[in-house]
Length: 194
Image (cartoon, rainbow, N blue to C red; front, side, top):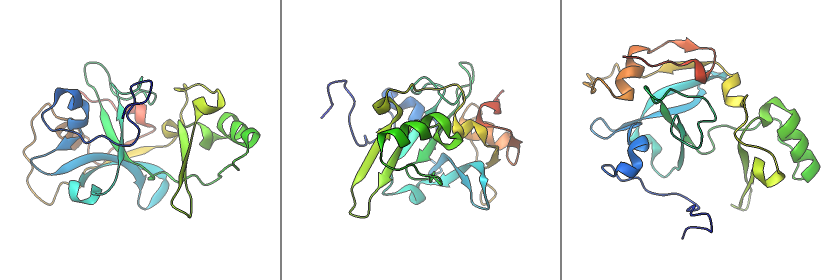
């Protein structure tokens, strides 16, 4: 059930042909059963990677949609003329210098640590419990101008050489195929054009 703000906690299944989910559908190619995913590069944790992932690899996971038309676009992705959206698997980004669960430590971490320039943290406890702390729980703003995700270089690695894909010329998969293997200083430096 939606909360008092209309937000549905948890996850919502995305319906392929429902216009309400058009931005979700822009990152999923149902014909070729792949999705555009942002994650750490498997060989370099200091490098982000945008890649086409088989939908079968994403089963039993929840993912976050980010991009031009999502939540005020805190990562500065795309433009009105060329919107850019990506999926991020929940739990894909591990925090290395985790703060303690004390209010003052959390506040200091979010405000003063480079790794703390994020929207929030979810702790995965040994007993299966999940604890989420969002910046607004501590009275901090989101979005912020300089996010942690935009401090890392990113490479496009579409992994499409296994078969012949005939993408619609206006779809994100086609745009990313044109810049495959290119490296950018940060996410917001990725410019898609026709």
